[in-house]
Amino acid sequence: MDLQFGLGTFGDVSRGADGEMLSGAQTIRNIVAQAVRAEEVGVDYFGVGEHHRREFAVSSPEMVLAAIASRTERIHLGTAVTVLSSDDPVRVYERFATLDALSNGRAEVVLGRGSFTESFPLFGYDLRDYDRLFEEKLELFVELLKEEPVTWQGTVRAPLENADVFPKTENGLRTWVGVGGSPESVVRVARYGLGLTLAIIGGAAGRFRPFVDLYHRSTAAFGTAVHPISVHSPGHIADTDAEAWDAAYEGMEAMNNTIGRERGWPAYSRARFQNDVGPEGAMYSGSPDRVARKIVDTVRTLGIGRFELKYASGPLPHEAMMRSIELYGTEVIPRVRAMLSED
Image (cartoon, rainbow, N blue to C red):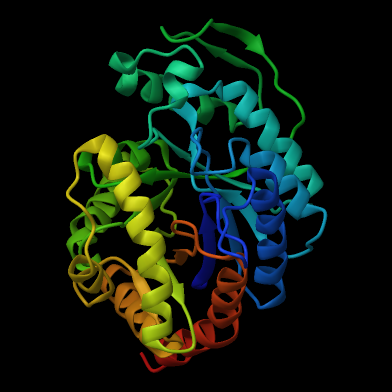
């Protein structure tokens, strides 16, 4: 696969031009417009995350992606991520097979355990079963990918006996697993022969090189398919560094402090933010040239096949995100390709 460029959002509820918070409904409509703009400027992939809390508007990514599919023709559509642990693998597969039909084969799914846990009690799952839920459900999902009758038995849902699932896709469903930094998770992805998405939200990209090497060693040991690796990281682009940083800091501060109060994090600071946008940080924020150079460094360091910018972090205005998307497609992506062509 040639290097691809994606955009991702968790559906952060954002502010309007008047500074007031928008409704979740308007935020969702804005996401559809953002995805349409992403296709217009040449982005390859658009991902929508799943959450079940007030700060994020999207709890059903497939519905949003279906709306996007009806207004686009080329861009691939998927998640960032689908929380498989608190869902049913059969229903997840059916929904994405349906999205694949609606989009003429453009659907992808990124499966994950979920770094937020609200969905577990909401849907009746015990957090003490966190690891077992994902392991067993991923095992079943991999069987469903074969698109043949499935016989399966586990402990977290009813067994299946020669069960067939519909609709079938026309060319299969591309499947990734999102990993935050656990070697065991990387080995699991390799064992099942799925694509690896590295969620890099802290520190320099280079510290994830051991996970890339582990993935390749593991696929070789298991004899499974090797897929391009994707990186998913936050960022914001504006015409100048100062403009991008001022806008991004407000959103990052609001998001980090809200979640941090629940998790015992220290208050977010401008000093920490400047470290995050620097060479040793995981945030790709600044002018097009700065962001392009940082992406190039990540691609060269990790040897990835897709870079996905999480362009929404906190209550950024819709207009600022649309400008960020435009700059990503029209200036950042061409600069990255030009710099990499020198290699």
